[in-house]
Length: 433
Image (cartoon, rainbow, N blue to C red; front, side, top):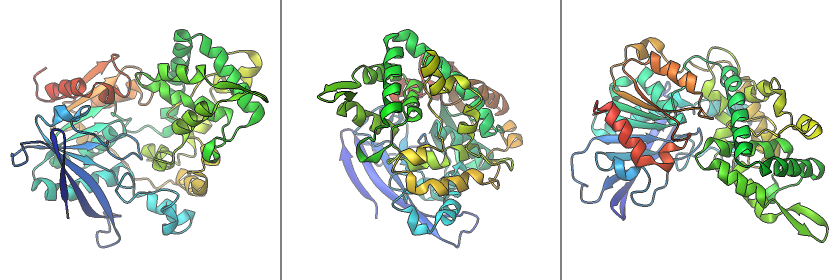
């Protein structure tokens, strides 16, 4: 039974839906999907069009807003909003090291998780749309991976869409994971060098931390094994608008003097753990490369394999020859399943997913070329998470898509300036701009 309650300016209703685990076997096992309905206070009984929000990831539940935070306030001027926890995330039958053993061993877990990609998420949306809207199409807002889902929506069930709004989420339509990472590592290098140009003192700080980590192999609170490669992966911050500044402040207070000499401070270790652990979103690590799985080829730990072709990311070489230590980000690698206690029990499951070759195609280019759903997409210039050229190539494939290419924001533009970003996309999709 749904429950409604209030926050400042908003009436919220928690809703739960039963959907098939495998939509091709509707009579089989079912799972629960959770979504939170949001409507502006005083408009509870108004006839409003629906907007469903698909979060970035994979592996993250929808935002837990307080009142009309971020982009939600702008959306509630025009829509009744559904914040969807995609299957396996948030309150939607969560999948993690604690719950997955209920499925059985690694093989059973991998087979189960094969049903948690964008295609299944879109079929969940269609399964619940009739109940939510009475059969009317709705508008989808997809951030990052949510945009990948929206693109699949346009490929598979455009009749369910009134419009599609994408922010940093136009995927490559036919590229293998290897293609994605061959374009990603040069962007990571540019972001790293731009950070050092902004904060020259951080080059020596990063080197000193890396040397300490290589020598002492510290274990963070909770059992996370900090390696040099794990330290480098803090570069995920560099894909966000304020990330370079956050990384700088993190590095400047890394060490504290103790009776035994200088060591990494408790505060630094706690902050690093919060950034590196996948305890809150294990599906990000398990299914990240599966987002690009199609064409009969395994992803086979693509980011780790491709990294070997970019020698400047070799930390040992950088520490030996004095070249800048480069940071990485947006790259899930096999060693993470050794370092992170939230992932260690799932390593064999991850290996089986990486070996999988039977991923179904995610995008129908012919259908996208004939698209008649209004689509607007924010494309962030030199986006670290989603390659700009891949996005623009896809935009050229989708008939009628209108793009806003900007260097004003990084990948998290919807988070940092949601009302403006959403207002721009609505103007484009309505033909007002």
